[in-house]
Image (cartoon, rainbow, N blue to C red; front, side, top):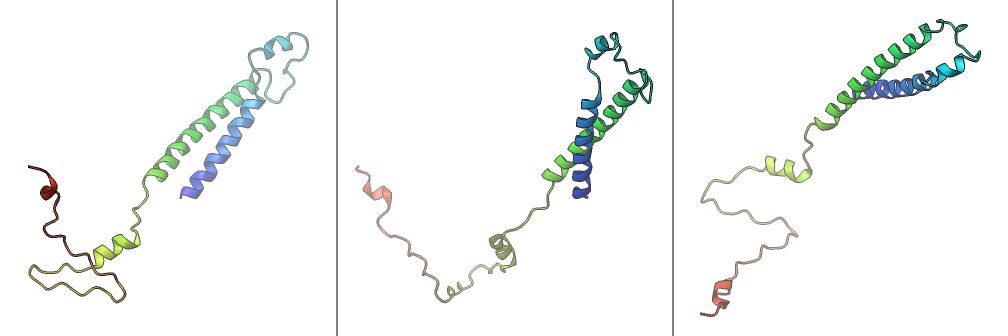
Length: 125
């Protein structure tokens, strides 16, 4: 679904760019006074402006909706668990008072807690 929305988004963007480039600006009306009018066009002098502006507005709305859709797809992804998170969920909790399991072969032993060398002993009184 995301791919379909992305393709529609790109096509709408390219179409809007093309239609904007085809439209006449406000200054183009001055050129019509000197004989370069658009009265011989397919839609007539005002028909082409209405058709192009309506089509541009529709494609701009499609572009806006597909932008919102792509934003939704980008922010609402299922959470992927890493290897360590999956291992934590598969380990069975030990009941209280049960003996600890021996570390795996080749694993370094856990360091023993330091006794008598706490930071509070170093503070002068």
